[in-house]
Image (cartoon, rainbow, N blue to C red):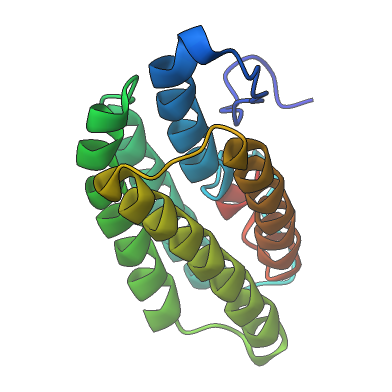
Length: 169
C-alpha cells in the first residue's frame, strides 16, 4: 500500500543459458547487492525516538541513492569495477548505522541486521574474488542468489524490529 513511488528490490531469477553469461553475471551481481540494501517505506516505527529514526532513515536513503547511481554491470568486467564501489557504500552505511545512539531495546536487532548485511558483503567479496580470478561457474549463481535472499530476509526482519523501516524492503 505504499504506492507506485516505493522503491522495490528487483526479483532475480537465473536462467542458466550459456549465451547469456555476461548479462547473467551482471544481473546476479546487481541483485545480490541490492538484495541487502533497503528501499523506502512510509511508516516509521512508533516506538523508536524520532532522532534515531530520522538519522537511520537518512543514512539508508542516501546509501540506496548512491547504489542506484552506479552503472549496473552487464559483464564480468563491469562487475569487477562495480562491486568494489558498492562494497564501499555498504561499509559506509554499516559504519554510520553503528555510530547511531540506538535505544537499548533496539540495539540487539540493529546489531543482528548489520551482521547479516556484513555476511552479504562477504558473499559479494567472494564473488568479486572469483570474478577477478576468472573462476566463476554459472551453476554457483543459483546458490549465491539463495544465500543472498536468506540474508536479505534476515536484514529486513532485524531492521524492522529495530524500527528501521527505510533500511528494510
